[in-house]
Amino acid sequence: MRRTRNQLTIAAVSFLLGLLVVTQLRAQAAGSGLGGMSSQDLTVFVANLNAGLDQRRQEIAALERDLATLSANQDRGVVSLGQVREELASIRAYAGLERVTGPGVTVTVDGPIDGPTVEDLINELRGAGAEAIAIDGVRVVAGSVPTGGPGEVAVEGDRLDDPFEVSAIGGAETLTGSLTRSGGIVAQVAATSPEVTMTVTPVDRLELPATQRNLVPEHGSPRL
Amino acid sequence: MSGTGLRARIGNRIRSIPSWQVTLGLALLGLGFLIAAQLATERPRIRYTTQERTPLIETAVDLQEQQEELSAQVLKLRDQIHAIEQQGQGTNAAIRKLNAELEEARLSAGLIPLRGTGVVFQLEDSVEPAGAVENELDYLVTARDLRTMVEELWLAGAEAIAINGERVVPTTSIIDIGGVILANSAYLTPPYQISAIGSEDLYEQVVSSPGFADFVRARQDAYGIRIGYLEPPEVDIPAFAGTATLRNARPAPSEEPPASPAPASPGTGG
Image (cartoon, rainbow over all chains, first blue to last red):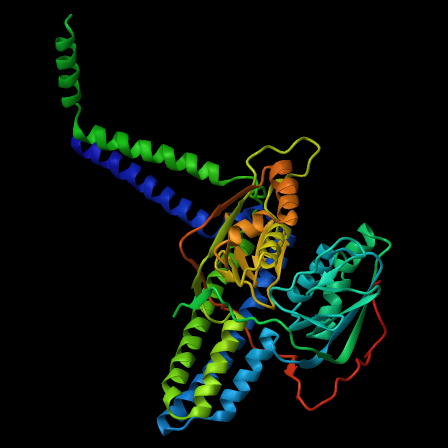
């Protein structure tokens, strides 16, 4: 009788232990930081995740189409040069190695802005879905960093004029809405640097140059 | 009483403890440890506990898991496409040339995982308490901190960067939403590891820059944000697992002269 009671006690403690291990692991793995968010922030967060999911689903659909065509061609023993060229042009455009055209916005920046604020603007444009960005005719790629203090900003070694123009290709309405929303970058700059103005203009067709940079890494090798 | 006698008595006493009591004791010790760990996990980033948020958190966790699955699927499909293209290499010179250009373009775009020399920086929230009139959020790592670190690495000559496994590409944004950070629409959990491939002296290049010194003063010295680094023999950077398909931008025909922008509607903002 006493032995049974002891075994039951150990079983109960082990159950609790297991429960806590699982709770602890789950908390650390996924939701730990989310517990600190307000309902409003969580709603924005979920919307961002949904947008990311949609993009990935579209990417998967496009990749599956490419794979199906490539496989069919392979079965027939042919290679579609047209398809390879199209893919090459698309990836080069994405990387910033090709000139690109498309709708989007221009942001005219007037006044003594500094490098980090220009970077904030670029980050905001990217967050709103900009696919290609240029500043005063210089294509902004992954490694392009606007540097310098107020009124002395340079990008890729080129000092920017005052005013200067940031052009971004993407959904014009989404880009404009994101930049000019309450609490967005335009409002933030107006509040913190009243001498700087940003004017956002939707544009039907922009043409952005290719980067002059060599983007192929020299110190890293493909890990396949 | 002699020392030998005391040791013998203690030994006998220990041997007389039933094994179930030892097991139970160890289990309770584990339980206590886990309860303490559970409480310790609930650091400043967790403050709200209202019921209506639970479904939202569950949705967010579920979406994040879905996103990870889809990202893995994207990478797998790209690998399959890459493998088929490589098989077609030997057929003729034009295809070999195109495939080589394709490989170079993918490397440039961040669509291929890399391994090479470099450095890994780690940023962690401060453990110092915020003063009564201070903002608690200043003691947490922000998206701006991660962007500053990324910028310093680019300026120091980094060739490829990833944050907690999210590759930094031309379309990457790093944003804060209510104290949590997203990069490429993926949720990043602390600590934040910024891995970069570059020359062997990449670390020295970063720490000798005035911008990095300003960053350390502003965040580590003032608020206790913990900045660490590692220089492993090799740094691994994953491929970008998001979308690289352009929906609005198109490669410009090379023969077309540049067109000036045509405003579509009146300006906003200012």
